[in-house]
View 1 (cartoon, one colour):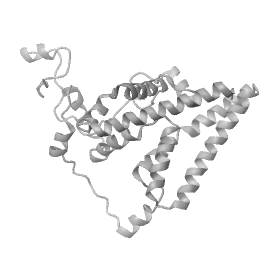
View 2 (cartoon, rainbow, N blue to C red; view 1 turned 60 degrees about the horizontal axis):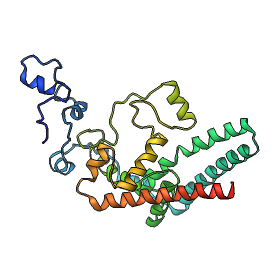
View 3 (cartoon, helix red, strand yellow; view 1 turned 90 degrees about the vertical axis):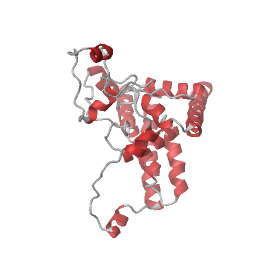
View 4 (cartoon, rainbow, N blue to C red; view 1 turned 30 degrees about the horizontal axis):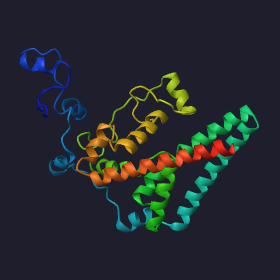
Length: 269
């Protein structure tokens, strides 16, 4: 049963509703960031789409100028996409060679460069998902899945979530893909992970995508067909077919990486 909207979301909620002097005052109703705290079970997104409309300001720009700024090109798309993959392959190869020859200083530098370049894979995925890189549609789709495969990324999750992000950008009632403000962690261990291997991320730092959390999310989705995060559960509600496609992609990623591990063990590379 859904909690009435007027009840605050706190351990003392029941007590506060029966007392004239609640221990914890309610947050202002007008605060956009109090919505999550007041709705432990958020409204179904289908209902939000019917009742919640954001009045966006359309920037004045002439149609020819806009077409020029958003023009897509297969040639430029290939130069950028293949160029990035070549840089990624070069830093990865250098990292492996330095490690294989036990040149640890060179290995550390190459690994840092490789990780820095790898951090921009997500930017490519974002643009492929929007179809803004190649003029030919299937090329965007092909490289979207290729980039997603090598980076433990689920484009199905991103597509369904990003739709709401653009409908209700930074309005937590309809967009919980990006919730602001946030306070990135400057804890020494967290910063060290961001500069090396991000195993577990920082406490209450939602946008660092630590390795352990990401792998576990893929494993859970692949074997149970269920999402773990509240937001992903919400966006997939009523979209069982899309959720099954997301689970199938998670299985593909797990099989691909298991095959890579097996190859490295068998051939000792």
